[in-house]
Image 1 (tube, rainbow, N blue to C red):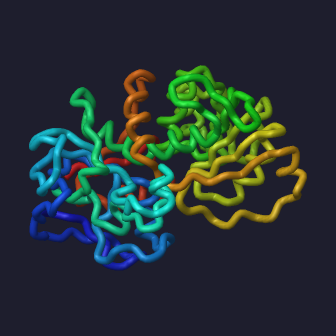
Image 2: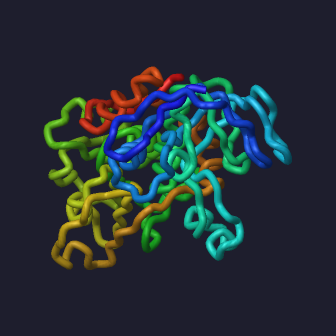
Amino acid sequence: MRAIVLEKPQTPLLMRELPTPAPATGDILLEVAACGVCRTDLHVVDGELPNPKLPLIPGHEIVGRVAALGAGVAGFAVGERIGVPWLGFTCGVCPYCRAGRENLCDRPLFTGYTRDGGYATHALADARYCFPLPERRDDAEIAPFLCAGLIGWRSYRMAGAQGQGQCAGAGGASPDALGLYGFGAAAHILAQIAAWQGRRVYAFTRRGDTAAQAFAKSLGAVWAGGSDEMPPEPLDAAIIFAPVGALVPLALKAVKKGGRVVCGGIHMSDIPSFPYRLLWEERQVVSVANLTRADAREFLDIVPQAGVKTEVTRYPLAAANDALADLRDGRLQGAAVLIP
């Protein structure tokens, strides 16, 4: 198999020829059809997340076909299209797993971080964390659902959205006015769902990024502006996807009393000090950690109902460094996807 490998953080990824692995008990071997390029990949490659498996094959938005099944795997067939997300293994026995909070497992493994991922022609995955995918969507277009979509959905639920029905935010208020800070892969998916559910979406981008602002409006945002601007009305909730700690006080300033600010990333720069009055009146700041399999099933069920479409830029596998550079420098609209 061919794979793009990180041998040391803060160094370019390298193409390698490796033996194609055989699936162990409980595992599935996939032939990779597409793998999204996520900002978390960037954090791993740039050394902002500690203790990655090295050498490492990054990538955790994997779409592929079942090539072989390990012993004990049921419910999947060779040739079936499946998806593999960020959360790649949980212990099942720690207090969090037993309480149904597997996203907080004490001994997890993460695809493309602490176990090899999908920047390759083949990948191994724990069958328990693989999800059947519909055949009617293009491989590249569905890849961003496996992290950008899932983390966006969990962030949305943390902001107050209640599944496929109505919303009930902090204190029982409905978060009808929703702010999205950082209009990248996750926000461009979530904006469509929130607009479909009748929310008023306010998109915040880099100052002067008129292309991203126009893109947000085309996907249902009622307003788009710079992250340093105040929206035309106070927000019920805000989700921060950009890894910029300085956005937290700005988002707190934009939400109304009892509002909630959700930090949706796994890594963020330090949050600067801010006056207590921005937090007072029962405003809340919360973070999102990983995902659960229930999140995935719920999100993948609602996507076709909402008619979600993804904007993707395709790159050959060998151009993984170019895709990461374009993401790092803000040259992408929507999501980047590697095609082996």
